[in-house]
Amino acid sequence: MNNDKVFQMNFGKVYGLLLNKAARKGRTKAEVDEVICWLTGYSPEQLEAARSASLCYGDFFHNAPQLNPNRALIKGVVCGVRVEEIDDPLMREIRYLDKLIDELAKGKPMEKILRK
Image (cartoon, rainbow, N blue to C red; front, side, top):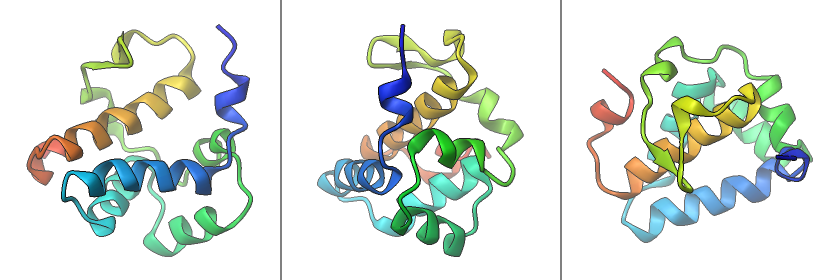
């Protein structure tokens, strides 16, 4: 499967979609930012800079300061695919974020989302 189209999407646009998904279910921008920072190691300031720059989604993950080692604990299905079975490492990182935002939108407590 060719994922180049996903990797080339503008991160700022994707961020807006993730934020809208969570906000529709009553979650906040601060919670979305916390999840993204936990997963990628970006500080809130770095996240804001990445969001406002014309950075592609693939580069957002390639440039992540420190991917959280506990991300391997993220299991489940996103878009009909088990995240732990995705072969492409970059697509797996993207789906980890999708899964975390899904859990946030479903009302899961933050400590469970962040695998504490």
